Image (cartoon, rainbow, N blue to C red):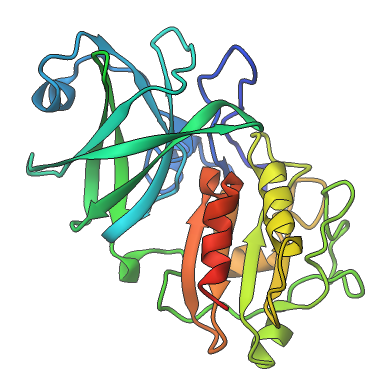
Length: 307
């Protein structure tokens, strides 16, 4: 399989595509899931959906959406970035978001909290959304000083997702460990390696252990998210006594960024990074992807729910 394409992070002053999720295979980013997740949506100042929600807005902003998809349901966490049309970061703004479904029905406003993230120069805005209806859904971000922009969320019912969703059985497969690399050239490309390669997924599930499962490749991801996400998750692991919870990290590639690892294929993942929590019965409890994985409080909350 060809090396995956993905959107690069433009660090420091240039911020346009900073949250792009890496995609596997030969697809272009727009092909991954058919959604803008994994790309930076281009600023379309005062497009019709923005005008409908914020008629008094006087300039456009770009809303950067790096999630593969959003599941239907209440209180869904969504993280995004903001830039000006000139690609300058919009940091620390007072932002409200609105949801507009395919029928033009509006919901909101919902507050978006700015988070200053050291590994993401642009920072992140985090909102909690109610997403009752599947299908392409517009998210409009409006700042208190009169700027507005939109992105499209791919909203899907959990039972229709190609990626294991909460309530569904986990894909129980062997995963590489330090003592049994299972054909991986490098079990962990983080330097130094993380501490999440002590047990295989199939063994942990067979033993009835809860699992925090991460898919990410620090060395071969072309964004600024994959490496920091593994560090953040491993830091959460080390920060508390999690009982018999197994923390497992799986690299995306079995070699130097060319061949997908077997567990990635078996889980049908088309982007990275991903985190899944799996309960003692072997069912997916929660999942998260992209920039959510650099929010240590979000990761901690998912792990807490297992204990």
